[in-house]
Length: 563
Image (cartoon, rainbow, N blue to C red):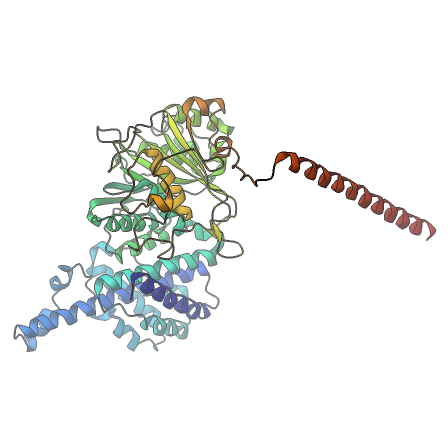
């Protein structure tokens, strides 16, 4: 079975589990139910991984002739598990023990005790798992039904495959919960295609990756996938993050733990504006999806903050506070490049002038920090149907910050108008193709997106503009020459001076112009009289319909007058 087929099978099983589990939800709010299901999934995974390692260890010991009490003692030796990067699961927290007692009326308390035991024996998980099942007041029969459903998911065959399987199931559930929660769901979940696009454009091969509003850690997961897909090791990147919502902070830790990704998200949840947990961090890559247009961000308390190098943000909108927070944490040029940032932002950030935002934007443009702006289509986000945009900032445009080389693009900014891209996945949700797990990707499954996909079209225009060499698989016969060119209606490279002529407004539509129309081959001498005749016919039909409307209104007025 190919990796793509495996992915589809896993997601089909996840969809079946979601539909079955959702029928058990009853009166539990989606925001609450998320932690109930994902906490149990995590417990099942670490228990299965533990049992798989236990069976493996037993085979090794028996092959060495070890039996009896000595065998049992070694099977319960914590070091034999942690040395293999397997979480130690105490007896009371093992899944079989929970399932055997699932009919008890206090099963919720048993789950809480199991999670506390796991946290107690695994310091890296301390205070990072949901452990309030008893408080939620879930009916015991509902919990038993959920435990039985999750029991059907197996994570014991191969630890690497099990981690990937749970990772996909976990991410699938995060997306489904975000859909169920509506607006609140966006606080912890960024659509996969947006994360994939950010990662493909920033290319975080190695260095420090930072997200100060990390939600459920999707940016970090995709960054790790990118590194491994391009022949690197996950240890090539160091991950730093922060999240203010306590329950979302726990989700992030579980999401990273099931993939074996080490990250520094701070010892507790915290607000990045009021209490930065990484105050001295200078990151090589920043990826983020901050909350849009937040008015209660404590701006009045931070008027003289060191981060506001380009101007004090308005107290009624945090957009330019976030942008300057990102700039503050970018690594400076060091002779080999500098820090780069890619983040989602409300469209208003591109043109707003209220509260001094226009002046701040002008200073950022004149400092030559803006590398690329991408206008996104509407309906990509679960939380809102309004369109957003992507900002890409860099400390160094000389090309030295690119692993495979690049050109000096100082004084230039690339504008991409992607508003016409995307495919409707549901009646209200659009996706960019190239961000899924196989169909629109190349044969490696997790490598570069297909050049013909939405994400590929955007990412490769950006890479060509930066002067990167063509990838090995690029076929000029199929995709054309690997070189950047302005495409009317889609992309345009503009100078700082040119941006200044537009008042430093960064809306891509102002720069890319209108899309070129294909010539239909009809000579103008023939087309003009034909179009003129069609126009005259439209005028005549309009006058005829207007006369009909007037006659009807006159008739109605006469009838009313007679009555």
